[in-house]
Image (cartoon, rainbow, N blue to C red; front, side, top):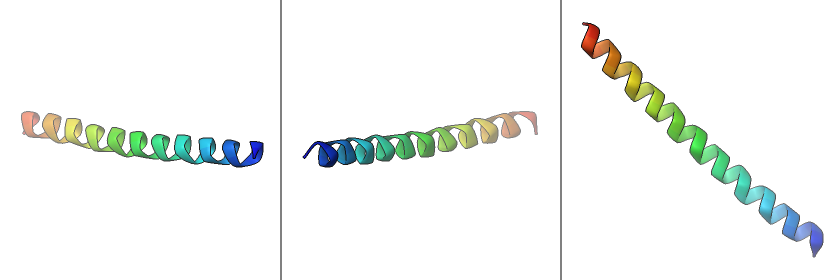
Amino acid sequence: MHIFHWFVTLFFSGTAVSLLSYQAVEIVQAVIDFLVDRHS
């Protein structure tokens, strides 16, 4: 059961990291769009 608990923890942390990195990419793209719009 110890291995199963470790696997579940790894899975959830991996999902959280992927969601956070996806949101970070979205935020970076929004900032770039904002800067480009302001400069044009």
